[in-house]
Image 1 (cartoon, rainbow over the protein chains, first blue to last red):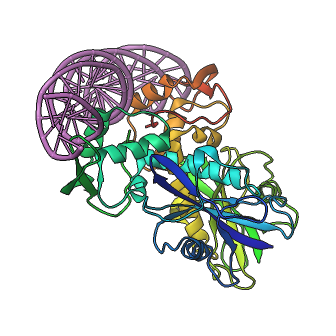
Image 2: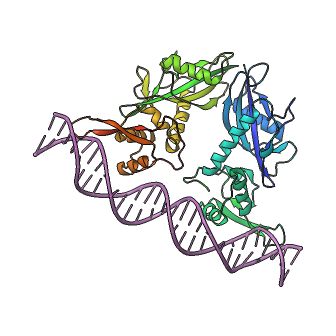
Image 3: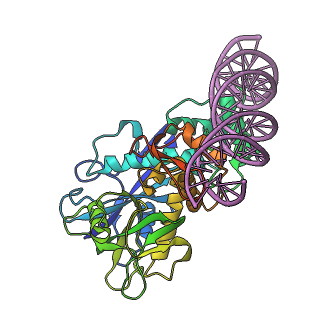
Length: 202
Length: 202
DNA sequence: AAAATAGTGTCTATAAGACATTATGTC
DNA sequence: GACATAATGTCTTATAGACACTATTTT
C-alpha cells in the first residue's frame, strides 16, 4: 500500500486567500509525493514543501488522513494531508483563490475544505494567522487577514482593542503609506512562536 | 508499506478514566489491526472496535497519524490512530486507569497522550462527554465526569447553572439513590447528536 | 433524629459587541 | 486644502466565577 502526503498551502495576497495548486495530469492537484521507504511522514511533508515551493520553513501541521481505497485510481494510496501557511510574499504561479477553485483531481477538493475549516477554527484561538503576514504589517492588514479568512466584517475599534490587549504585538519603527492619506503604523509580533490564547480572538 | 489503525478507547468507571489495553506480545498495547487491501481506513477502525470490544457503535474519531519509520520493529507500519468513547457500562477486562499506566508497546504511550489532550479539549466545547455516560444520569455524575477528565474541581452551582442553561438536558422520570440521603433526579440528553457549543463548557 | 448528598441565588468582575468622530500625512 | 485612511472611547449586555445554606430521603 502506498502512503503519500498532500499539502494544502495557504497564503493571502491582495485581500484574497489563495491555495497552491500544481498542474496535475488531468485536473489541477495539490502538491504531494509518496512517502519514502525510510522517510518519516512528517519529513516527507517538509520535503514536498521545500521541493515544490522553495520554502524551507513555514507553519506546517498534520490535518487528516484520507484512506478510502477508491480515492485515487491505480495502486491504493493513503494520503496524510498537511496544511501549511506561507507569508504573503510567497512568489510564483499556481496560487488560486480559494473562493473560485476549478474542479480538482481526486479528493483534493474535500482536503481543501477540511484545511479551510481547520484554518478558520485555529485563527480564533491561536496566533497561526501571523504566519500569513510579512514581519511588519499594519493593523488594517491584520484585520483584513481575519476578515478574508473568516469571511465576515469585523469592527475596527473592537478588533484593535482586542488584538492590542493580548500584548502580542509591538509597534515597530516605520509607517506604510498607500495613497493620499495618513500612513499607518507598522506592527510586528513580539514572538515568532505560535500561542494558544485563553479567549477567542475576534 | 503497512497501514494500520490503533484505537484509544476511553470509558469512565467509579470516578476514574480508563483506557482499554490488549495483552500485546511483550508489553500491553492498544487494540489495533492492519488495514485490509480494499478496506477504507475508517472501516478498519470500526472493525477493530467491533471485534475487540464487542461494541458496534461508539463515538469514534480520527486522532492523528503516526508515521515514524522506527515506531515499530519489522516491516514499516504507519498507524492511523483513532479515539473512541464508550459508555461506562462497557464490560470486561483490559481497562486500565489512565493515571497509572504500565510501560506500553511501541509509541502507544504517546498515542494515548495525544488522545487525552484531544478529549480534554473537546470536552470544553462540545458534547462528546455524553458518550461516556449511560442514557440517564445524575448531574453529580455528569460533573464527576468533567472533574475526572479535566483533573480539577468544579463548583457545583456554577456547573449546574451552565449545563442546564444550554438546554441540552431534560429531566427524565426516576431518581437514583445511593445511601442514607436524598436521591438525585435523573437527566438525559435531549439529542444523541454531538453538538459544538458557542461558549466553552466549564 | 442523624447522616449525607441534592438542590438552589446573588453579587462582582470581566469580556464582547454596538456605535461616530477626530487626526494626520499625501497629493 | 481636499482626500482618504488611521486612530481612538464609551456604554450596554452577557458571561464567568466566587461563595453558603436549605431540602429531602434513607437508615
